[in-house]
Length: 230
Image (cartoon, rainbow, N blue to C red; front, top):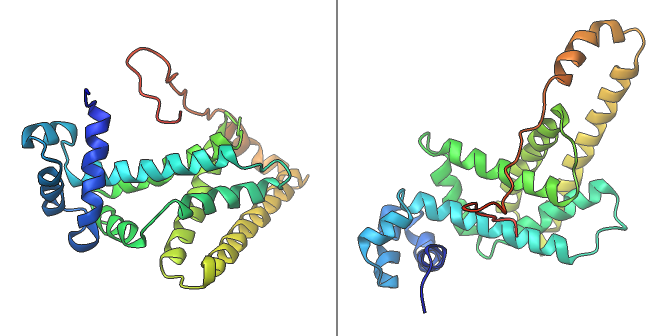
């Protein structure tokens, strides 16, 4: 049976997960995973040019996919939208089978050389959540929704890592409070926007915001395109 590029990458990732709790997302763990898989070193490094960093990102993407699968399998139609967001964040954290893998990942992505990769991974998680829940914004709100959720997700992730309460109940309460804070802020913005005294002062900022458009997303069903969201 032919092994595809993605199959080989997932094999490397599976082998890597055994070593990460002890050696982190490191070159040592990457070399051990190559040995465990019996892959040629040159092939493994062609698949993962940055070694452990590429596998750490692949692990994050695997969790994102598990979250999406659960969102699609659960009936969230009866929930308020804020509760759907909370459920999606909860699904993402529950997709993690070992907190130590995430702790080691945060250590990796806290390094200046990889901080941008970590920020991009969080942004992509939040983008997937909004897309999965049907967000259709195409203006500045596209950015503010994802930026706000990135802050909520990141703070909840940090709380969750240190939470030892039964079924992580303290984390879900923390998440609800963070979302409540965001809703209050959105309510305040709406009040300011509708205030007749402030409207003249907000005309220019509102016009500038109106010029901002969401990025055009490439269709993932075109030849040569990967579609990780399927």
